[in-house]
Length: 302
Length: 256
Ligand SMILES: Nc1ncnc2c1ncn2[C@@H]1O[C@H](COP(=O)(O)OP(=O)(O)O)[C@@H](O)[C@H]1O
Ligand SMILES: [Mg+2]
Image 1 (cartoon, helix red, strand yellow):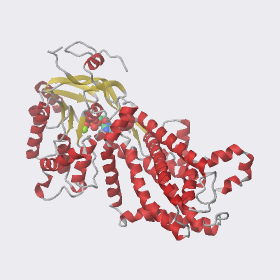
Image 2 (cartoon, rainbow over the protein chains, first blue to last red):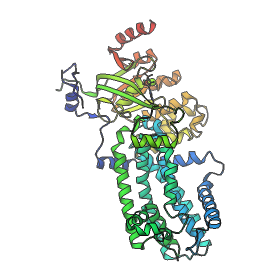
Image 3 (cartoon, rainbow over the protein chains, first blue to last red):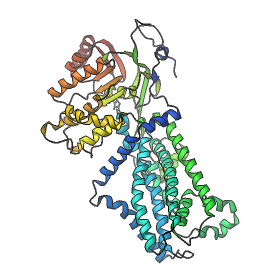
Image 4 (cartoon, protein in one colour):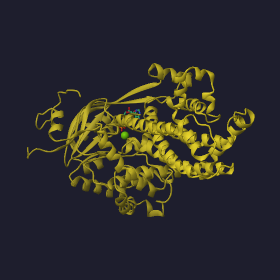
């Protein structure tokens, strides 16, 4: 803080001293993390109603409305099936390729939409931010909530596809719930990190499609995950295989496939996958939150 | 210390700088170029800085209503945003009692949503509980008077006239008790009847022991509500004192 010569005319005190004496707080002072979390909690109704408002105003403009939440992943899965399943035949090694592919596409889509929307959570809402006072993390969190809601529809479609292609309904399907929760926490952290990055560097928005494309190709969405362990280069460098297979999206996708399907090749044993998923959710969820909180007071600057 | 006035807002040599990303010139918008900038950490050539507030200091006290005047672009809105903590200060500091609330002309609510839902959203964003919001919605819409000519509160806000939108925004903000209320030309677009009503509301808010800042281009408004006035020009304070004196100086400056 700078020292100034300005003093109050009444008392002759320096302004900083005057403020301290009367217990005034500096505008733009970062609240402590627990205080911020409490504040955020008290804004939960705002977050929910903002998320609702976003869905209403986004879908209100399209003619098919809610139907797009289901159509988008379906069209994606169809396109990838034609190219990778029929034309390139990457299906070798997986008995039931369509459910395998669709699970990958749908789970990947969940994170992808959160990142895409998250990057603009701050930069696209400067008007709101400069007008009203609320914990800014409300915005990326609301965006995550919107995508979680969209994902309910997608999951219903996915389950119908999986059943339709002959997979049995088992108790393992219950695992869908914790996997979905872990991925949501992971996504929320990612959304907050992306929001802060996007508010600082406008160019990030341009890079997101490329980053997501690379991530898609690296997550065994379009081909069996065994391609990694049977790859000679990766076999020669064990650490590289570990790195490739620790990819959080690959972990979530593998777990979901394991839950929904009977005979599916996995990157690691389910136990290891679960630990990795929990680890990723905690690290990215908390890390993204702390990273976002530290930038709280600068978001109005644009 | 009992005889002393109690300060509610202290602005100590505050500077505010806007950073503007201009639409790129050729070659700066490509992914490769943005990647290079991110890696090397250089500022893009299209980044411009606008130094909007250049070292402003003053103290505002409890129960005061302060008029803020100055020509367009002199930094009035910027100063209010900084006091509200919505824009960070570049240098210096701003201290405030409680959380100042800004009521601006371009406070962006959601234009695709009906007025009613905007009221709910705005109230929640001010930190009200759902129960409080529920009990207030009708009152707020009635006060704004947007339903005087039919059921407008259920139409999207983009169908409102600018005056109607401003009335609704004012009504939302005025529904809450504020320690420090910052009003930025929010009363200007309303018609005479609404202006009277809202000026009365400003006086009420003031009587509830808060401090009110009022930006207005209507000298009458300022004379009626404020006894102190600050004249801002190009991000600096030109004059600060009793409304009559400051307005006189300002008038002779503008007439020149
Ligand atoms: N969002 C913004 N980005 C960049 N510059 C801005 C922005 N808003 C205002 N400015 C600049 O800051 C200065 C002060 O603007 P403002 O505070 O809106 O003036 P006033 O409210 O007194 O008319 C002007 O030079 C204006 O161009
Ligand atoms: Mg202005």
